[in-house]
Length: 242
Length: 242
Image 1 (cartoon, helix red, strand yellow):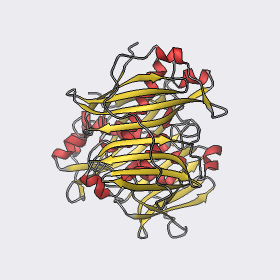
Image 2 (cartoon, chains in turn red, cyan; image 1 turned 180 degrees about the horizontal axis):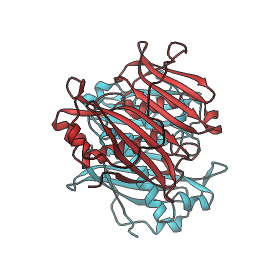
Image 3 (cartoon, helix red, strand yellow; image 1 turned 90 degrees about the vertical axis):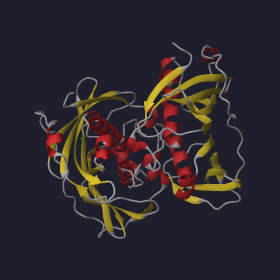
Image 4 (cartoon, one colour; image 1 turned 45 degrees about the vertical axis):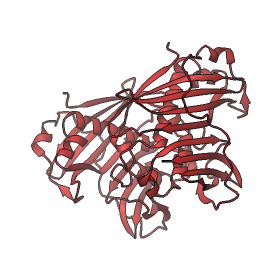
């Protein structure tokens, strides 16, 4: 089995945004799908981890897009293991259009947790390292630390609902993105595109949880964001527009 | 080209609900995907309609599920044209698991609108009728009239956001479903499954529109619902639990 996974998608008209472009949450879906199948096929996916009573948790993700897939466009997504540590593994992505042009890159950091205790657990470094490749890391910054904005901004309230939940009963990773992007005014989407979207998942949102959504423009076209519960961030994000 | 379209899906772990089941909105996505590709491949899809300056609009949809697809399950979705009229065409669906067991059926009613005026436009009855089949209609009730509940219930406010919009800049058909289902308490999802979900789209939700969501249990385990704008329903739904 190839170390680099290759996945093909065709954008679907009814899943595009009002500009006729694929959205960041939809790209997030493609990335999670590719990550999940790539890992599963190589024995360290959902089933493989379940046998060890563990589960993958997406810790950080950064997506940089130069251009967005449009109506009925065929795209290819490559994904590979970039680095393996005791507690974290890094996975890279490249999104390419049908002419071979790179539309964007993504880098992600994953941890494994014990399914009962929900606490971090050690990775099978040797097993995972088999899939390390010579493929260079994407030419974008790794996801990193994001400055808090929740103390200096007023939050917008949001309560976690049924549709927000994933199979573990927690706020779905993609739904964090949706709720954050929904804070931006439509005019910003009309005038610009998101050039970089970065998110750090800090703790799990649960059904009925009262959250507050925060956003601050910390530099021109650069927004830091947070989702908080009882004043503590459960996730932070940074969004650049161009 | 076969009159009956056949589509294959594999459920994805990160798109299941907290019970590990495919959701009604996700099944709605599968149906819309199948309808859109089935029509496109036969010349009366998005592109074909665009040439005539028209677009399909989903008017009514009823889904009945005996069982829900679960983790990494392979499902086959059949879709075919059930009936063609001057203003409406009916499309049927059957969802089957890998053992050939029927999981559910759906029936839908579509209209065509002019892309500029957004007014109904006549269908190409002759062209569409080529695809009528001998395949019997699904053994479920057609979607029909739903009794209003907005006068007798208090509404929950909701404002249309960026993530709710489709490529036409209107509230996405699937998002109506999500917002309606989010009104039910999680305990109901824990104890029962939706046996029938029926929805009637009446007018288009737009960005920033202030909506109110209504729900009333009109018989045991049967809820009528509505989404209203300024007191007028833009959509009605009926949901049966079992």
